Image 1 (cartoon, one colour):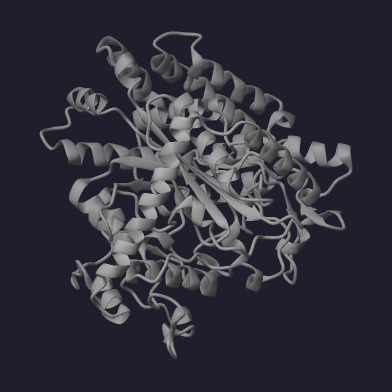
Image 2 (cartoon, rainbow, N blue to C red):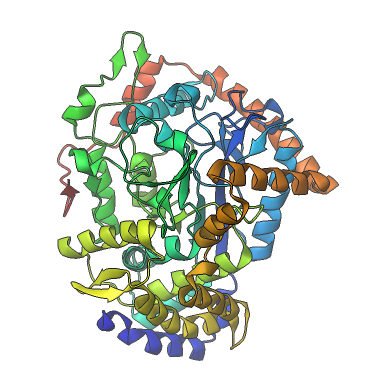
Length: 539
């Protein structure tokens, strides 16, 4: 692994000399924060997405994920982390003003569930596009179970400043193709983010326990905390462990996309969405008059592929993500492994954003060889070990095919990140450096991590997961309702809600094809029967 870090210092020195620090201040951060709507009894809300919030199909900042009850609140990509959090706070205030007595659940793992039938699928209206989104979710439920799909998280979207890419390409001798250089560099960054992916659940995991209703009817080796709660004593993020959402690798229906290059990644996913899967063929596609899934292939669409990190490009209306990546390259990277922090009303805090930005630049500047099969297995094992046992004294992870204590490896990495944090700050002692020191304390003192704090609170109050989560949710609701958004921001959200409803109506009115024809044409668009997947790992 030391070879990965050898060029780091030289690259940082060159960037300092070229005046990169102020340029890096134009990096952009965006957030997507999921949260379950919960009714007064503490069960998942069965009500429709509130009309006053606008259309979940077309609203840019307020939508739904798998379930009608699983809200997804989105920020624009902004250069100032405080502005990102301020926008997310105003979205929460606006939403809470229209939820009645419902709560937004404060943790990643869900509230009391009454089986799959209690979880309503998200609905997006009568248009072909909206129907397709609902059928896709029905397919997810049929393939993986609905309960897994209502686990919430915080997605961190990050893009480097355009001027930084120009400077970095010149320093690295990246040639004339700016899009190709940018995409290739970010694929390397993604590989390193996977290598170090275990850091995120250790530092920011906040789901060491689950409500007993989450695992009802299934065998588990989770330990009972009390009659209503299961947990692992040293867990950090059960959401990222074996009980979370995966692509069924263990049942022979999953895949590992190839991160060797953007072309390899796109071809991997394209192969998966075109290749039939016998297990999913047993479900059926259109059974009677109802679609049970979009198709019976390894993936219905690209979004089904679960990964802790994804290369992303903004898509046009109904443009496939793989098409957008092929046409315009990688615009930003999406990190998907952060839990909702129950101690933060927004589910995320400023130091976390600054640390993740530092991690992004660090992973870009370190060398990044291709991931071979043995390393891929170790990456996956490290993530699950950290999710289940991350705070366990002496826990060993795999590095260079050898065991290394998690805390030693983590301290080494965060130590190397110091020069990167100082570059982002334009000097020592700035906010990125301070956020890094905060995370180093969590390495030295695991009891400071959110996962440990949650278990400590449960023990001190003699409350199970549900009781603690509900109380924190109610505290957050009171905070948001105490101060509504500014008049200007309120007017913006109300206008966006009206515009989104109007846009949905226009889409529905413009449909001129049957859904069967619409889906057939969408799935066939851009097909190339000669396409073969490079280095695709089918499990």
